[in-house]
Image (tube, rainbow, N blue to C red; front, side, top):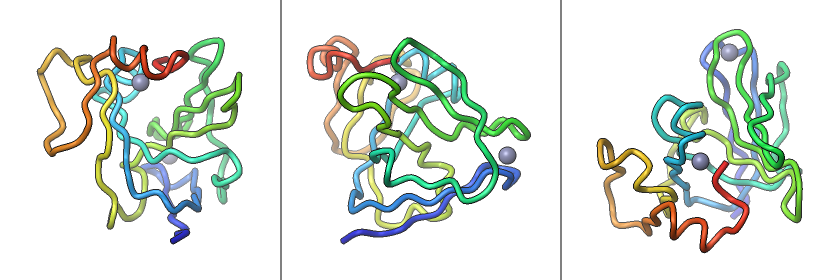
Length: 143
Ligand SMILES: [Zn+2]
Ligand SMILES: [Zn+2]
């Protein structure tokens, strides 16, 4: 079932909606996600056209030649990771913690699961891929 979910940064300057039937979240502990979020990025992934910014304009940091990271320039909240090149350009991994409600969502997959060297782990019975396994599965993922 397609559901419209809304979200916002901490201060509320940037607001968005995402329309998706997905209920699975992805956790990423690659070094870039680790540093950008301060821990790990747990995201609800959607194609570009499913995401609409309804207030404010996220600031964007180009984190690699194929991706950028969005955040609020006022409060600093991490908002998304977005692919900017290749077959899935526009693909957006919205920071799940910025959603107004997390009802019905659960972690389905963890990538770069060894990125925090075991210091913190996501509980639950989901697929966990190490960095090496992640690279093997998604050749251009990870940054
Ligand atoms: Zn903000
Ligand atoms: Zn990552």
